[in-house]
Amino acid sequence: MTDLLQLDALGPGAPYRARRRTVVGDVTGAPFAELSLVPRLFVNRAMRALHAAEPLPAERRSAALARAGRIFLTGRIDGLDLAGYERAVARVSGVPIGVVREAARAIADSAEKAGWAAGQARPAGAVADWREDATLTGGAVWTRRGEVFAVHAAGNHPGPHGLWLEALALGYRVAVRPSRREPLTPHRLITALRLAGFGSDQVVLLPTDHDAADELLAGADLGMVYGGDEVVRKYAGSTVLPQGPGRSKILVTRDTDWRGHLDTIVDSIAHQGGVACVNATAVLVEGDPAPLAAAIAERLAALPTLPPEDEKAVLAVQPVAEARAIEAYLLRRAAGTRAWLGGDGVVAELGDGSAVLRPAVHQLDRPDAEQAGIELAFPCVWVAPWSPEAGVAPLRNSLVLTALTGDDALFDRLLREPGIANVYRGDHPTYWIRPGVPHDGYLGEFLMRSKTVIR
Image (cartoon, rainbow, N blue to C red; front, top):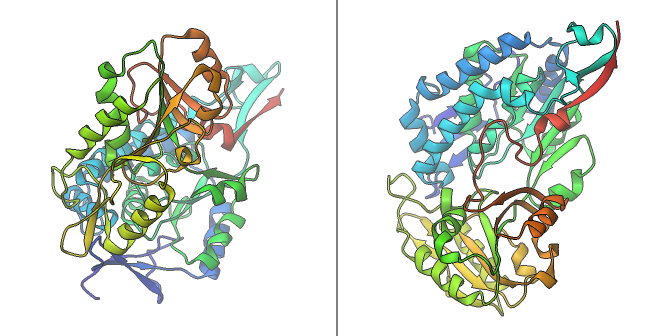
């Protein structure tokens, strides 16, 4: 075990190697790293240190974030250069290495632009600093709702770590609890942030067991948690922002020939290995869905079965036992649907204890079938008929909806629908995103508020 990569906790002061550590395995089940688990007392002490600290001035924060992005890409951290980090994340998470590489660059880009991107949420009528002239006669000032922000991070994809950087840009001190599945990305990122000028009382990495995890949220003013529907129900309307399943969708109306958009449809389903919340999990088509389902299945069936560190890999990999459990769940829930792909199973074992999750395409007989709401972390799509009479109800509960339609009135309804977070019209994949546009609303809408100031 002494040869394993050591991922120490990053609390106030020096890195801390805990007496209690957990093994992080790769996709074959072989030990890869040891992650220190800090006790409740350590968490409480770290959270008090964050509260006691003052934020860096705004300009220094933005400059340090930009430096951190460059260090993240060019530095040797935890004994790994960028290429070594990318291979390690692919082996541990099962996410294809090309996806990891793309995510690493997106995180660095988010760091460079975090100050600007966070400011996009500021209301037009508010200023960022009370010293500006607008407050001399009375005006709105955009200010933090608290001082310390806690994150229970996801482990299915490195990309979400680019989002909480906006909290640092806004002056919050940030505590991150990494996922045991993939702690390498937040460990590298927080190390880079410290090397770039953020103190150990500004941003911390606190790996914990479940008993101490709630202490992280309890010790913060605001928090963000990734998880499933249970997490969303638990934290909805609280001081914790839940980040749940995306259930992103594509709608094709009768006035649009899907054949001209098949590349975008398939790419929306399979891009990034199908592991992201912005991947399409349902396609609704006005008319007979069978031809489109068949075309999607034909394209997805051609994707290669490769280990995640292979440069040509495009599908996610899991340990065999976990892959078989996902497969069993899918086959159970898909009963009664028409399987175009994956009806006999989706697991392709690689012979080393790991397995690729092959794509699945199932056709539903109505747009409101319960299966349309099932999201799995690989290219698994439900294709269903839709009609104007069905309305927008089957399209709700979507992080992204790509609408392939020429109907302006319908698009107006989709844009007004509160249950659809983002609406893309035309040939735009559901995974399209860039710094400065909202993901599930702006994070700044949750972190900040406007106060009237006159002086």
